[in-house]
Amino acid sequence: MDFMYSEEQELIKSNIREFVLKYVEPAAAEIDANSRQPVEIFEKLGELGMMGISYPAEYGGGGEKFVTTMMVTEELARACASTSFLHSYSYGLVGHPIGTFGNEEQKKQYMPGLAAGKVIGAFALTEPGAGTDVSAATTTAVKNGDEYILNGTKTFITNAIVADVFVAFAYTDRSLGAKGMSGFLIPKGTPGLIVGKHFDKMGVRGSQTSEVVFKDCAVPASCMLGKEGDGFKIAMSALDVGRIGIAAMATGMTQGCLDESVQYSKLRVQFNKPIAKQQAIQWFIANMSTDIDAARFLYMHAAWLKDQGKPFSLAASKAKLFCSECASRHTSKAVQIQGGYGFMTGAKVERLYRDVKLTEIGEGTSEAQRMIIAGAALR
Image 1: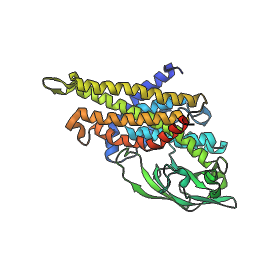
Image 2: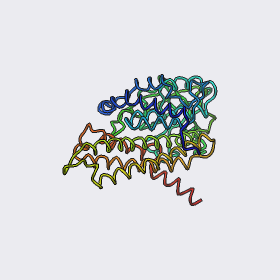
Image 3: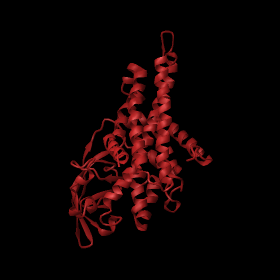
Image 4: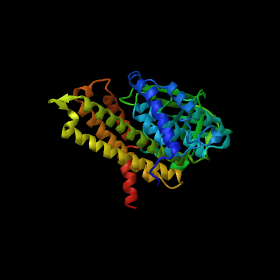
């Protein structure tokens, strides 16, 4: 693995950093305070080519490596976790399953819009009784001629209230267990697709999270993603990619904490000297800086494995586990460095402290990742 960015990637990183400072950083606090989905930022990211940078050119993408997408996700997270999360989500949980398992018509229908930042997707998998245990889902899709009739309830669905298309999962044959689950691409406005109650979250408040109900929702058989029975495989593949995205996001948040901690500690004077000269603060900062490098190598390695066409599921779990728990530790330390100021609503580190919890839950909890990692080690 080459640990150096190419000239093209360095240019992309410079461009996205400039974009973040101009558009994302100034809006981040307001996005959080108002629980507002930053649609205008995603349209601008689409214009820059950053939403579909790793999609094939024939579907409106930039043809770059997946590593490059994750580099963009990390840079966005330095300023705004909500924007970073939605960027990763669009690729990992929507674009990836369509691009990998969709037919040509489905790819042409949705991927150019996703790449342009003009189409928003939702990943409808989680249910009230089926979180980590995906196979416990109860949503069904019953074949009726040339249609499938869906019934069931999904919960904690990101983007549901603004989505143009839902990547949804339901059992077509419950007797087969996980092998009886199928995936569907369901356009917004389909009769029987109901967006229910909206959830008010502790963090990552710029992403909209809602309940989705399918009530005798009839969709053409042409809406099936992949083949009947492929649903569980599609969902797991999407979550593997999404875990690398969460790892990149968490790393960016830790970098944002380091940025804030260095700046604050140089300016804050106590006992007649900047607190940056206090050994305790220096140790906090040294640990942050070291862990960021370790986290970045872990998620980049997982992304590189994907680019090489090699198995990356285990590496994705390791990256997500380490990067998210690393971010959790260091957002807490960043608040500690700023003391009372860091505890106040409106402080960037206070926002990051709330945002970071999602990274230990979304796309598979830390406990689930430990089960996966231990299972591989004990095999």
